[in-house]
Length: 287
Ligand code: ARG
Image 1 (cartoon, helix red, strand yellow):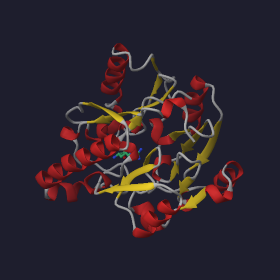
Image 2 (image 1 turned 60 degrees about the vertical axis):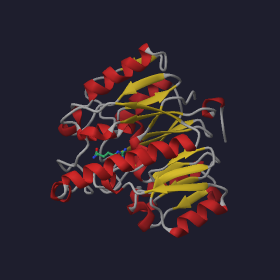
Image 3 (image 1 turned 90 degrees about the vertical axis):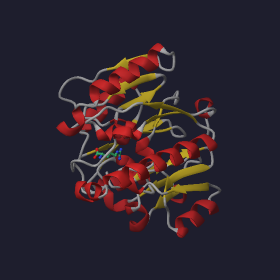
Image 4 (image 1 turned 135 degrees about the vertical axis):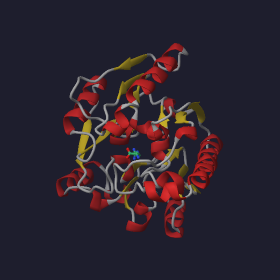
């Protein structure tokens, strides 16, 4: 389904100059593996970033690239920086001290986007909220609602606080696995209404809730292998789905549904627990 806001998708990315894996705040992060060949990983990260940016451009998006900050390696995942809808950005509040330093530079960057006329307003959440941006608050453009993940990182109260700002319907989903710690690692609405999801990441009640909202024939359960490859962490632009290297089965499944798969080697970022979706943030959804 498309809306006028999908006409020219505007996507924010963060330059990977300061990206590295230097701490571990999720089970995928392997600082030792990174350190064993830091220069090689840095080069590979630059190449992977450029491949992703190019693929998004080829799929029809306009990409804005902002600089990162030294000592804040995970700024390369702007999906966690804010939730943006209707030209308003509600800024995240991070759970881990390792990422809390990102809040100030991201706020400055978003204020810069307001100055340039790309957004209208930057909104601050009340103190005490924990909410890690679009990674845990996915806008479903076709259903016009937010899917809100909570548990490992964001709290349900944090998700509700964001959605109050926008006054939109939400479907809260409890994440029960440390490996799939943000909703965008295990849940992805596609443009045609299908939803990719990885069932073991959710509580029983949340699985039931997903089935209340999404028709059976639109629900696509992903294999353990594709989930572990970070393929659910995908960016869907029109009929193109951009993600980390997928299994051939997933490529066939998407083709059968009329989507074109653009899969890329994003392994340096998977070493930090992130894939295509969390390296991006959509700025243009009007709601
Ligand atoms: N190393 C980052 C963290 O643990 C990865 C974040 C990936 N973001 C996401 N939305 N899945 O916070």
